[in-house]
Length: 345
Ligand code: EPU
Image (tube, rainbow, N blue to C red; front, side):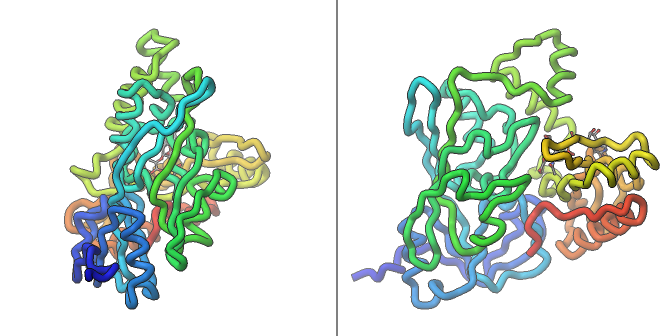
């Protein structure tokens, strides 16, 4: 009789360099490849794995490895995508956590279910997308979210979470807090509303409309525009290792903002509905002269100062040395503490 754990795909001393988009070297003492909810239950029931601390790895696009991992690494490879419901008001789409996010967006559009186009070309997996509530060009994941399934790593039970239960915030959710390492997202469902409406409020999309004279772009055109904007500004992780924006855009009070504007009238800032003000971290870093700089084998991307890159052979420690130097100079000049966006391990 095979034991319940017999079917698990386990590797020991597994290299992680190919499994993170920064291309940072690290080794997992033990890595288990998860292709189904049943695999997760096998992990929970396993005499040794069940009790071990766990690290959940999706597409590896939002993580900085600064050391080898003693925790059991669960590499999530659950696949599958389908339309689960359609009514007069919306299409509900579902994808396995291991599906690449960018492929899922392109597929949904090709199937004739538009609504995710502003989130085109974001690296990472579907399962990682809710963890940091990915967002770009005026749309956040939470705006199109229906529900998700997650397996509790203590009980092995699958639970369904609503948006309210996920506690989505700016690049944040319950999976970065209370449920970190405790619960694994296995499937995510998205509600794309009917009739489709373009989200065009972002400056770069307004620029594209002015450039092309097309003021009523369809979803495919918006998709193509977003892909072009991203390709022009953000490094392709397949070519230059990176984890997207390295810092969150900091939020300050209106008073703090007035004070900073008094000293630096050019500062890029966005008033928030609650009266606070979000500042463009990329602008702050750029203003401190970091764009294009290199420290060791880590650097600041030439076209977008918010993105740190691996110039080739960098370690996580080198990336964090650069990150701290940037934090210190931004604090020194503006009195603002930048917070890293990726998970630092
Ligand atoms: N800016 C500079 N210099 C720079 C970079 C930016 O002056 O080197 C200025 C820009 O000119 C612009 C402002 O800062 O006026 C904001 O820049 P941008 O529009 O590129 O957006 P961002 O705030 O830097 C955020 C997200 C991105 C997302 C874009 C587009 C965060 C941390 N980042 O970047 O998300 O793609 O908006 O919506 O919120 C990610 O999270 O990994 C990510 C790439």
